[in-house]
Length: 178
Image (cartoon, rainbow, N blue to C red; front, side, top):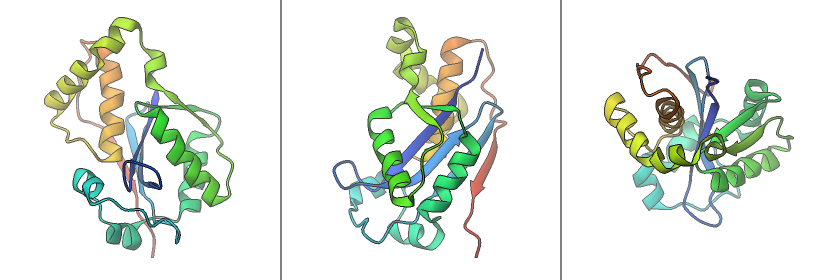
């Protein structure tokens, strides 16, 4: 079985004017890459309700976040010519496009929906299997890295239910250098 690359994005809010604040990428080799994104000067939309869900403050982004250009360059290097998959393709592609647009960088990879890789019966069982993965692994959702891993493990669990869902992933958090 080919394990897909999964990309997940957390954002400043849930509607128009929102922007990406964290990106997580789960790779087939078990590595996980996570970036906090420093808001551009004109990225002012902020919803407290979104912050309550993901637990990332705007101040944390200003202090620890990477410039959008750095994140875009790192994503292109990591994913060059590949396809990454998302379970929230509709919103994730919009936030990803905004990141690359503001960074003045062409996106060097494709983002597609994970649901295109599923058969109808798998798609129908997705939510149930996701809940089972969360229970088996003890992972807590609503951070981009964790969500990317949960999506990837849910895919694996659907395709090969007997596969052990060990938590032996290598987490690579991209920290801003000072």
